[in-house]
Figure 1 (tube, helix red, strand yellow):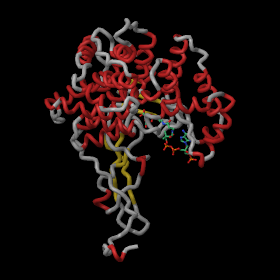
Figure 2: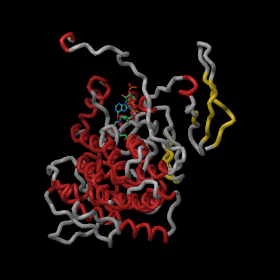
Figure 3: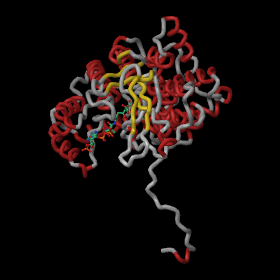
Figure 4: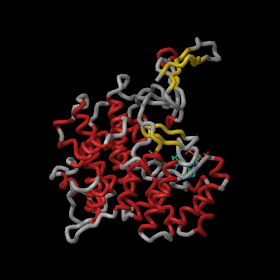
Length: 435
Ligand code: SDX
């Protein structure tokens, strides 16, 4: 980042001394005002619940232009990476290292990841403690956090080699853990990873094969899953990434930080929206019920939201939603489900919402979650596992952001302050005098 010639001057109507603050310019996107001296100079904090106007860090990983609906991973537009930028492994390498891999670098990276896909044999006993109908996100929070108990040899976050090994282990083992959570929920045996399959093909194999019959990989479906992973890989300083950074700022080990990110992603306002969007479509049931549903959404007291719509940053169409809709169409065509009623319902709902003043005036457009549930359902993935797939994909983004934070000389433990509106000091009364 570079210092801008312009400075920000904060002046006060009560005549208190004004304060000059530097403005920094990034490569692209909004400039920032460095307010780090504000509290020392004025005894005041800024107030920004939800961090609507706050940059918590500088980063070179992902850039989003919400007004234009643009998403860049290390400068490459998501449309190029998802359509002709190779596979999810290339996106992982790009996010972690800053550049796309050469053929030789990709071969070495994929080979390293492949060789770390198995989990310790004792991991299976963690699963045995969960109910069969436990939500997969509860299983993932538990088992990813538990990974730390197997890797005492590589938990020193200040050792670059330990950071590298932990990154590979997490990227490699997430598909295995997600597939194990699924197999456990349906009472089928866990399927070991196969080193002769690609990352996404191996995940489909661990999810849908069983010991009783041969499994045939469907390359169209594998490519669709791979694209889903690319689209979800990273997304700037979203809630779960900020959670991973905050956990990492205390020096917590990477497995604990990713477990914290999974916990945050679970929320319906964030990664849980794909599951909620499919449930919403199922509840609406038919195109005839859309007007009544839209009426409920507009009624603030109903608490009903159009799940898969709206975004803190995108005030235009989420570029990932467009690509997800295309993938949806391709997968349904491949499976002979082009007349899938939910897909038709989703497209009708999108059309109606995009022509409705309520949504247009609030700049509410479909986000990545609006179509991803329909694609995943067509791939045979159960609704409750949708957010687990999101966590699988986002692990590389969380890890890349965590590594960037750890190696940032400016990084300190994150410790926001508050505007205190509670009781001033008061005396504790004896219990007999209370009430
Ligand atoms: C993800 O941050 C990221 O990058 C996240 C993510 C990533 O890749 O990491 O992109 C993934 O989380 C996508 C978002 C998935 N969530 C949903 O689809 C859930 C539904 N969406 C909303 O909950 C909401 O849009 C948020 C949470 C996504 C964004 O909320 P904001 O930015 O805090 O906006 P807001 O709630 O202040 O909404 C502004 C207005 C309000 O109306 P008014 O008070 O102005 O009258 O729009 C309304 C809101 O009520 N609104 C919606 C709505 N989203 C916002 N009304 C109906 N349905 C919706 N979905």
